Length: 218
Image (cartoon, rainbow, N blue to C red; front, side):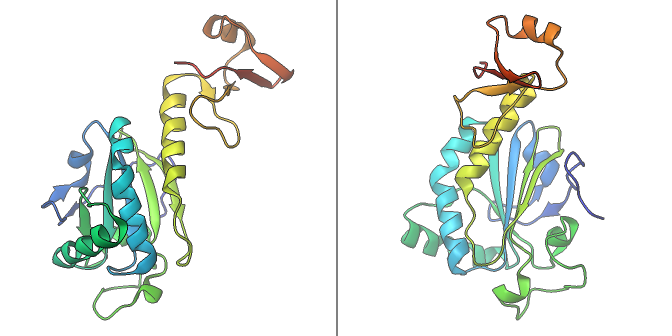
């Protein structure tokens, strides 16, 4: 089954570094960022997990929870976390799933279906297990990203996208290229000019009829 934006995120039960979870129950009324890794003690992922540990308070401010995933066992994650804290200067406080049977990886199409086990595997043979999913409080998939093995992910971009999603879910706007919190936004195309006058009484800039630019609401 291929996943698409706005599909319900597949639910699962899994062991994590903070005990067993039911994914949907764990999300609750929060947003969730699920990000996967090919194997413990890999260099690029070590930097990623450490950076996410540093900026976790920013996600918390946005009512978003972090959860990592690696195909190695939970006890291995604990040892890896010590290395992450030592080398990256941040303690990992969010849970990390131990996906030793690749059940979650398969459920979320993170690797080919024929892959069957983690034993004896290297990072190179799990190249597809480097994905990011943002799941909303409604348990719908809002974003999916998959990166190549040699390119570290930009988690500041995940924060930026989360800001955009939360803003556009609340107001009838869209965010333009390279938008950051506080920048001007675009009135959604689904909003008529008459309705826009009620929603944005201060008016807007309109270099083209379909391009209506306003100050960020809220």
